[in-house]
Amino acid sequence: MNSLPKKINDLIDVLTGLPGIGPKSAARIVFFLQKAPKELNTDLADAIVDAKINTRTCKICYNLSEEEICTVCADEKRDRSKLLVVEDPLDLIAIERAGAYQGFYHVLGGVISPMNGIGPDEIRIRELLERLKKDQEESEIELIIATNPNMEGEATAVYIQNEIVGDKKLKNKVKISRLARGLTTGADIDFTDDMTIRKAIEGRVNM
Ligand SMILES: [Zn+2]
Image (cartoon, rainbow, N blue to C red; front, side):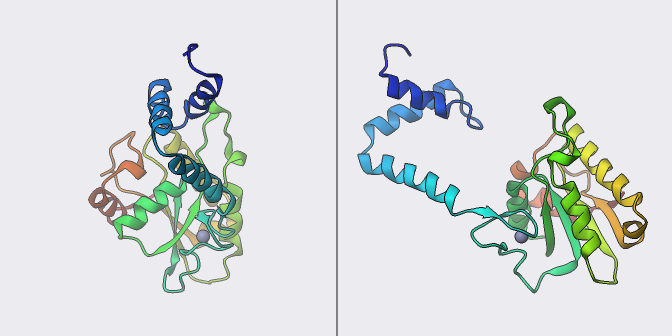
């Protein structure tokens, strides 16, 4: 790499380490952009900045949104008796795409992962519990926990369950379920096909 201009090396360094991109892919992207018209480079740079500046997290569910409240939360026709918990917005998109769910969501923004220094307070579990406590409806809420079927996802699901069962008010109000085991252990929900997601939601089991 040392025979390359510094600015090229800097760009390769920035791209390296993005999800799924190693040094070789980063170099390929940079050489592609060098050969491409200048407009493609400026359009790409503008789009990255624009998406970052003009996107925020929904103040109800923490999904990505252009407005204060995302399109899912703003949809009056949705089923208020169901709340589905996902790790990140990509999981929400995958479940929406599968089309088998009509309730609302809560985006945790990660999972509990002691190895990476992420405890319960680093993700939005408090916010989830507060949201459930604030709910004015008398009727029962079904909380469907759709964290990924790996060790950290399971640990996060169990933590949430314990917090709810340990709370007098929530214990009787919230019924907890988990996606069915159709999902392969270790799989990522956002890489799972629609049919498998639909089956996992339909076959969800009580926790
Ligand atoms: Zn929302």
